[in-house]
Image: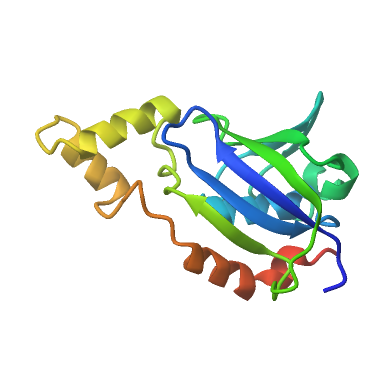
Length: 188
């Protein structure tokens, strides 16, 4: 690995307790590639429009524009440069999942890394797709704690019965990143 790496932290805004991940990516990565990495590490299904914001500049993409959207024209390293820089990623304009990203290290070195894409740590499961944003997610979590709630059964039928808000499977995430490393980093 000769590529310069970034250490990033991503956290969903407006959710308590926090849902976050710390991960490593190459600085040469395009924003559309970063989008797919974020989808994988957060647990989203890539079914909605997304947008990165760096200062006052916005870069939008859609789920079917891999390698062919505005995000596909810009490299992460050209937009995020200084340690501590904050930028945002919004996924699903209906639910408006707003993520804050922090560039924690712009010259990350870890000789033990076996790949350029890796999730180092994180906490809690991502909300289910189309649950209704952070307010819908709060209602969903409250209903799941109370089987007598009127919406309990409806939520279980809609979003499945296996959701665990505390579950974070870093091994599964890193297995996906490792198995899809070539595709995630490939650019024509």
